[in-house]
Image (cartoon, rainbow, N blue to C red; front, side, top):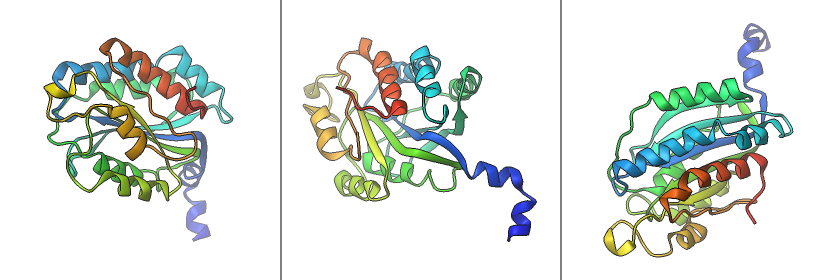
Amino acid sequence: ALGIAGLLPGAQARAQTPVDVELVLAVDMSQSMDAGEHALQRSGYLAALQHPDVLDAIRNGVHGRVALTYVEWGGPFSQEVRVPWTLIEDEATARGFIEKLAATPLRTISATSISGALAFAATLFEGNGYQGMRRVIDVSGDGPNSSGHPVAPTRDAVLEEGLIINGLPIMLREPDHTPWSIPDLDIYYADCVIGGPGSFVLPVDDPAQLVDAIRQKLVLEIAGAPPR
């Protein structure tokens, strides 16, 4: 086995690449959001990943690099990796990630299974080629878990793996106007979705806040500092 490993130095080195955080961006693409909201959410990630605040947070880390992957989700079995694990350490590597994401077409997915998104995201860390000081799932959504397994037990199982879950509840519509949402979605996320050391909820209730909220969320996650 050692002889074989010696023939594959690149793979062996990659398996041990240290990063400050391994971060899964799990983005809700369910039909409860319209096309404009999906486009706004995507543009928020594209803008955030090239913002000086995010790049500075990456550079100022212990290792000065992070590993990201971008996942879109909806129903219990409809999760999809849109951008695979990528090492981000400077403007050039960030630009590569942005170009891959920008090239993927927007889509909508039926149903909202936060439990499915968490369970899927939790499987992506093993064998991804990176060793992070923290492993984080960043889940966004505009409604409660409405399909698949119950979310709280799934969340608890994910936390037992040593992962951290942060939440971006998107509350852009009045709950009375859509059957997919509930009042106080941020409290629901705090009670049922997030968990782990330093985990946080960063709610958005105005479209004008979304881009800035995504940027702030990434800075906090990369720096390992929960919001005040």
